[in-house]
Image (cartoon, rainbow, N blue to C red; front, side, top):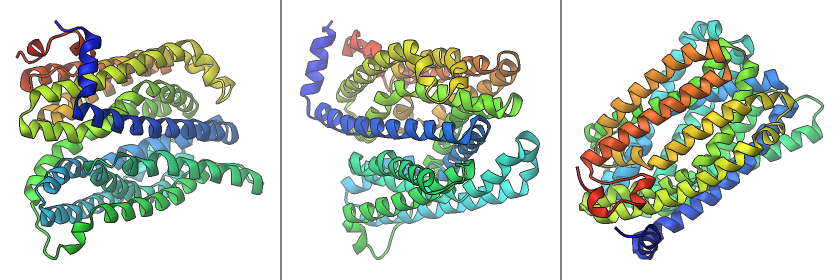
Length: 452
């Protein structure tokens, strides 16, 4: 059995290992900047809005994130997978058709979701306070902006332009929002409200969409020459629909706890828990950075049937991401109360929930990129089934545990659901693809990792 350190050095020396490390480094730097601005923005909102108003803002953003993932309808993953293929084979007419088709789909689904929410506004009025409904109407303007932005970013990722695909969302938009808040505090006597935060988000998102749209046109100049786009609508929908459901289930797992706390307990507890949840997500920064470049590499290597190289980059990715996650988890475990107090004294109540969520996120990182492995290799339907069952279990667990244990119950429910889908997908990846995406691949020989 090869020593782990020797295996890591061997992987780093390979060409794809260097591509992965460079792309992940860029993604990590952008994630880090986004985290810095994001926490600064959250602290500013929490301090200036007050606990109740901040809780309303968190609830609205959580609902909007769920709607956003539904409205994309899997077109971001469809673009990521097929754009790389069409570009490699110079099928520019097909790529132009995919671009047009994805834009039509996301805008159509956005319109359908908005109409559904307007017709079902009584449902939200029964679950949440009146302030939430008022801010939600304004936030719906963000839905088509975010959806188009995500598809355009995926097209840039397919060309391995990680920096261009993420700098708008992870750096420019939060920077603009922070500047807008500071300007408001300096120039206006009115307090910052939840609706103010949403308005800032709309303006900054429009600017980022314009930038990303221009970059997409610049780095796909071949599409300007296409006069007759080719559409493979059936193939794209067959791939995108289960991916859309899977992503929707993922978002349910991520936001069910915040939404049910706001509905079953109070908007204040939802705001406190959201701060704890955001800190726990810092452990996944390494994994997120790795996935930015790993997703198109998985599709490429699987198409070529190069399982050995696939195993190598998976091992490299999980090694870096887990090392980072472990260090961050230890730091947050001890510094959690101090960091939460930056939002306000009341937020220290979320310390126990933070500790539980750290464990759930650490398991998520240790298992590796199993979600992308399933969706990028044509196993998206199996992934959808697993994550769907996990989302259902998450709702049931939250409904049972939140009334009894509040924020702690929400954290336990979310962590258990996260552990379930990760372990279940890891088992399926071992059986179907015969690779090991987890941290344990460091101590298992390649031959054993390929065993069914």
